[in-house]
Amino acid sequence: MGNFTNSDFNPARFKNTILRHLPASVIENLHLTPVALPVGRSLEAIGGVIRNLYFVEEGVGSMTTTFKDGSEAEVSMFGYESVIGVSALMGTKHSLNRIYMQIEGRGFACPIEHARQEFRLCGEFQHLCLRYVQMQLTQLAQSAGCGVKHSVDQRMARWLLITSDRAQSDTLKFSQEFLASMLGSRRTSISLAAHRFKLAGLVDYRHGTIQLLNKEGLRESSCECYSVVKEHLDNYIEFDAGFVV
Image (cartoon, rainbow, N blue to C red; front, side):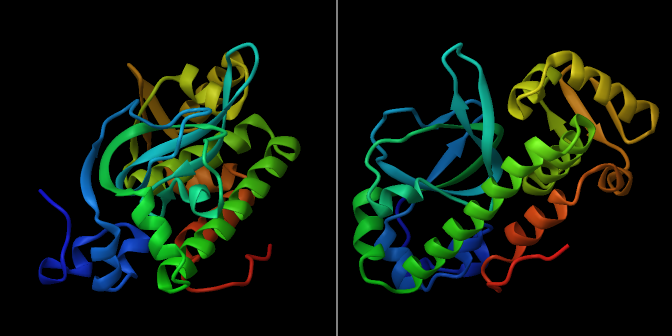
Protein backbone atom coordinates (compact mmCIF):
# COMPACT_ATOMS: atom_id res chain seq x y z
CA MET A 1 0.00 0.00 0.00
CA GLY A 2 1.60 3.25 -1.12
CA ASN A 3 1.26 6.94 -0.37
CA PHE A 4 -2.11 8.72 -0.51
CA THR A 5 -3.05 10.98 -3.42
CA ASN A 6 -5.97 13.34 -3.99
CA SER A 7 -7.69 10.70 -6.12
CA ASP A 8 -8.00 8.16 -3.29
CA PHE A 9 -8.45 10.61 -0.40
CA ASN A 10 -11.48 10.05 1.83
CA PRO A 11 -11.39 11.66 5.29
CA ALA A 12 -13.83 9.04 6.58
CA ARG A 13 -11.13 6.39 6.20
CA PHE A 14 -9.05 7.98 8.97
CA LYS A 15 -9.56 7.43 12.68
CA ASN A 16 -6.72 9.73 13.72
CA THR A 17 -8.06 13.09 14.90
CA ILE A 18 -5.58 15.27 13.01
CA LEU A 19 -5.73 13.33 9.74
CA ARG A 20 -9.54 13.52 9.75
CA HIS A 21 -9.35 17.31 9.81
CA LEU A 22 -6.75 17.82 7.06
CA PRO A 23 -7.62 18.61 3.42
CA ALA A 24 -6.66 16.19 0.66
CA SER A 25 -3.84 18.42 -0.59
CA VAL A 26 -2.11 18.32 2.80
CA ILE A 27 -2.54 14.56 3.14
CA GLU A 28 -0.84 14.14 -0.23
CA ASN A 29 2.03 16.44 0.79
CA LEU A 30 2.69 14.38 3.93
CA HIS A 31 3.47 11.20 1.94
CA LEU A 32 1.79 8.93 4.47
CA THR A 33 2.69 5.24 4.61
CA PRO A 34 0.57 2.69 6.53
CA VAL A 35 2.49 0.98 9.35
CA ALA A 36 1.76 -1.85 11.77
CA LEU A 37 2.27 -0.95 15.42
CA PRO A 38 2.79 -4.19 17.38
CA VAL A 39 3.25 -4.27 21.15
CA GLY A 40 6.74 -3.11 22.09
CA ARG A 41 7.51 -1.40 18.79
CA SER A 42 9.88 1.51 19.45
CA LEU A 43 8.83 4.79 17.84
CA GLU A 44 11.44 6.97 19.54
CA ALA A 45 14.56 6.09 21.54
CA ILE A 46 16.39 8.35 23.98
CA GLY A 47 19.01 10.26 22.00
CA GLY A 48 17.76 8.85 18.70
CA VAL A 49 17.14 11.00 15.64
CA ILE A 50 13.42 11.64 15.02
CA ARG A 51 12.95 10.50 11.43
CA ASN A 52 9.15 10.13 11.20
CA LEU A 53 5.91 11.41 12.57
CA TYR A 54 3.44 8.67 13.53
CA PHE A 55 -0.31 9.20 13.36
CA VAL A 56 -1.92 6.50 15.50
CA GLU A 57 -5.14 5.03 14.16
CA GLU A 58 -5.54 2.15 16.61
CA GLY A 59 -3.58 1.06 19.68
CA VAL A 60 -1.92 2.93 22.52
CA GLY A 61 1.66 4.16 22.87
CA SER A 62 3.55 5.37 25.94
CA MET A 63 6.21 8.00 26.47
CA THR A 64 8.42 7.17 29.43
CA THR A 65 11.20 8.80 31.38
CA THR A 66 14.08 6.48 32.26
CA PHE A 67 16.02 6.85 35.51
CA LYS A 68 19.60 5.94 36.42
CA ASP A 69 18.56 2.64 38.00
CA GLY A 70 16.93 1.59 34.73
CA SER A 71 13.35 2.03 35.93
CA GLU A 72 10.76 3.89 33.89
CA ALA A 73 7.64 5.96 34.55
CA GLU A 74 5.05 6.99 32.01
CA VAL A 75 4.80 10.72 31.35
CA SER A 76 2.40 10.72 28.40
CA MET A 77 0.09 8.45 26.43
CA PHE A 78 -0.76 8.33 22.72
CA GLY A 79 -3.93 7.11 21.06
CA TYR A 80 -5.96 7.92 17.96
CA GLU A 81 -5.82 11.66 18.79
CA SER A 82 -2.03 11.70 18.53
CA VAL A 83 0.83 12.69 16.31
CA ILE A 84 4.04 11.21 17.73
CA GLY A 85 7.26 13.08 17.03
CA VAL A 86 5.69 16.53 16.79
CA SER A 87 8.55 18.07 18.83
CA ALA A 88 10.76 17.60 15.75
CA LEU A 89 8.66 20.24 13.97
CA MET A 90 9.71 22.77 16.60
CA GLY A 91 13.44 22.24 16.46
CA THR A 92 14.07 19.01 18.38
CA LYS A 93 16.40 16.67 16.49
CA HIS A 94 17.03 13.94 19.08
CA SER A 95 14.35 12.40 21.24
CA LEU A 96 14.56 13.04 24.99
CA ASN A 97 12.28 10.13 25.87
CA ARG A 98 11.42 6.59 24.94
CA ILE A 99 8.15 6.06 23.05
CA TYR A 100 6.84 2.58 22.35
CA MET A 101 3.56 0.72 21.82
CA GLN A 102 1.90 -0.74 24.90
CA ILE A 103 -1.23 -1.94 23.06
CA GLU A 104 -0.95 -3.14 19.47
CA GLY A 105 -2.50 -1.16 16.66
CA ARG A 106 -1.77 0.52 13.37
CA GLY A 107 -1.21 3.98 11.95
CA PHE A 108 0.59 6.05 9.36
CA ALA A 109 4.21 7.19 9.19
CA CYS A 110 5.22 10.51 7.67
CA PRO A 111 8.87 11.31 6.79
CA ILE A 112 9.94 14.23 8.96
CA GLU A 113 11.25 16.27 6.02
CA HIS A 114 7.80 16.31 4.39
CA ALA A 115 6.16 17.18 7.70
CA ARG A 116 8.57 20.09 8.22
CA GLN A 117 7.87 21.45 4.76
CA GLU A 118 4.13 21.40 5.39
CA PHE A 119 4.49 22.81 8.91
CA ARG A 120 6.46 25.81 7.61
CA LEU A 121 3.56 26.79 5.34
CA CYS A 122 1.73 27.99 8.49
CA GLY A 123 -1.50 26.39 7.31
CA GLU A 124 -4.01 23.95 8.78
CA PHE A 125 -1.37 21.29 9.51
CA GLN A 126 0.62 23.68 11.69
CA HIS A 127 -2.56 24.89 13.37
CA LEU A 128 -3.65 21.37 14.32
CA CYS A 129 -0.18 20.31 15.46
CA LEU A 130 0.06 23.32 17.77
CA ARG A 131 -3.36 22.58 19.21
CA TYR A 132 -2.20 19.02 19.85
CA VAL A 133 0.95 20.25 21.59
CA GLN A 134 -1.16 22.49 23.84
CA MET A 135 -3.33 19.49 24.73
CA GLN A 136 -0.21 17.45 25.52
CA LEU A 137 1.04 20.18 27.85
CA THR A 138 -2.30 20.12 29.66
CA GLN A 139 -2.10 16.34 29.98
CA LEU A 140 1.47 16.48 31.28
CA ALA A 141 0.67 19.19 33.81
CA GLN A 142 -2.42 17.38 35.07
CA SER A 143 -0.54 14.07 35.36
CA ALA A 144 2.29 15.72 37.28
CA GLY A 145 -0.13 17.25 39.76
CA CYS A 146 -2.05 13.99 40.01
CA GLY A 147 1.09 12.08 40.96
CA VAL A 148 1.70 14.42 43.86
CA LYS A 149 -1.86 14.95 45.09
CA HIS A 150 -3.82 11.74 44.59
CA SER A 151 -3.77 8.20 45.97
CA VAL A 152 -2.64 5.06 44.16
CA ASP A 153 -6.26 3.93 43.81
CA GLN A 154 -7.28 7.23 42.22
CA ARG A 155 -4.31 7.31 39.85
CA MET A 156 -4.79 3.68 38.86
CA ALA A 157 -8.49 4.24 38.10
CA ARG A 158 -7.59 7.32 36.02
CA TRP A 159 -4.91 5.43 34.07
CA LEU A 160 -7.15 2.44 33.35
CA LEU A 161 -9.97 4.68 32.13
CA ILE A 162 -7.75 6.83 29.89
CA THR A 163 -6.07 3.73 28.43
CA SER A 164 -9.42 2.07 27.81
CA ASP A 165 -10.70 5.21 26.08
CA ARG A 166 -7.66 5.44 23.80
CA ALA A 167 -7.68 1.69 23.05
CA GLN A 168 -11.47 1.72 22.59
CA SER A 169 -11.60 -1.53 24.52
CA ASP A 170 -12.49 -2.64 28.05
CA THR A 171 -9.96 -5.49 27.86
CA LEU A 172 -6.37 -4.38 28.47
CA LYS A 173 -3.49 -6.81 28.10
CA PHE A 174 -0.57 -6.03 30.41
CA SER A 175 0.74 -7.17 33.75
CA GLN A 176 0.38 -5.47 37.14
CA GLU A 177 4.16 -5.09 37.10
CA PHE A 178 3.90 -3.06 33.88
CA LEU A 179 1.11 -0.97 35.40
CA ALA A 180 3.26 -0.27 38.46
CA SER A 181 6.08 0.88 36.19
CA MET A 182 3.78 3.19 34.23
CA LEU A 183 2.39 4.77 37.39
CA GLY A 184 5.76 4.99 39.13
CA SER A 185 4.41 2.97 42.08
CA ARG A 186 5.53 -0.12 43.96
CA ARG A 187 4.32 -3.46 42.64
CA THR A 188 2.73 -4.29 46.01
CA SER A 189 0.76 -1.02 46.03
CA ILE A 190 -0.67 -1.76 42.58
CA SER A 191 -1.52 -5.35 43.57
CA LEU A 192 -3.43 -4.14 46.63
CA ALA A 193 -5.29 -1.50 44.60
CA ALA A 194 -6.17 -4.06 41.92
CA HIS A 195 -7.42 -6.44 44.63
CA ARG A 196 -9.64 -3.71 46.10
CA PHE A 197 -11.02 -2.95 42.64
CA LYS A 198 -11.70 -6.62 42.03
CA LEU A 199 -13.53 -7.05 45.35
CA ALA A 200 -15.65 -3.99 44.48
CA GLY A 201 -16.57 -5.53 41.11
CA LEU A 202 -14.83 -2.80 39.14
CA VAL A 203 -12.28 -5.00 37.34
CA ASP A 204 -11.22 -8.58 36.86
CA TYR A 205 -7.67 -9.65 36.12
CA ARG A 206 -5.90 -12.86 35.21
CA HIS A 207 -2.97 -14.01 33.08
CA GLY A 208 -1.76 -10.52 32.14
CA THR A 209 -5.23 -9.21 31.24
CA ILE A 210 -7.31 -6.61 33.08
CA GLN A 211 -11.02 -6.48 32.25
CA LEU A 212 -12.89 -3.27 33.13
CA LEU A 213 -16.29 -4.42 34.44
CA ASN A 214 -17.76 -1.21 35.86
CA LYS A 215 -16.42 1.97 34.23
CA GLU A 216 -18.88 4.19 36.07
CA GLY A 217 -17.58 2.78 39.35
CA LEU A 218 -14.02 3.38 38.20
CA ARG A 219 -14.91 6.98 37.37
CA GLU A 220 -16.21 7.41 40.91
CA SER A 221 -12.96 5.91 42.26
CA SER A 222 -10.82 8.13 40.05
CA CYS A 223 -9.76 11.70 40.78
CA GLU A 224 -10.98 14.73 38.81
CA CYS A 225 -7.88 14.42 36.62
CA TYR A 226 -9.61 11.82 34.45
CA SER A 227 -12.33 14.28 33.42
CA VAL A 228 -9.82 17.05 32.75
CA VAL A 229 -7.57 14.88 30.58
CA LYS A 230 -10.45 13.18 28.76
CA GLU A 231 -12.08 16.53 27.93
CA HIS A 232 -8.89 17.82 26.31
CA LEU A 233 -8.08 14.56 24.51
CA ASP A 234 -11.56 14.38 23.00
CA ASN A 235 -12.06 18.04 22.15
CA TYR A 236 -8.74 19.80 21.58
CA ILE A 237 -9.63 20.49 17.94
CA GLU A 238 -12.86 22.30 18.84
CA PHE A 239 -12.13 24.53 21.82
CA ASP A 240 -9.45 26.61 23.50
CA ALA A 241 -10.69 27.03 27.05
CA GLY A 242 -9.66 24.59 29.74
CA PHE A 243 -11.98 22.26 31.59
CA VAL A 244 -13.00 23.81 34.90
CA VAL A 245 -13.76 21.64 37.92
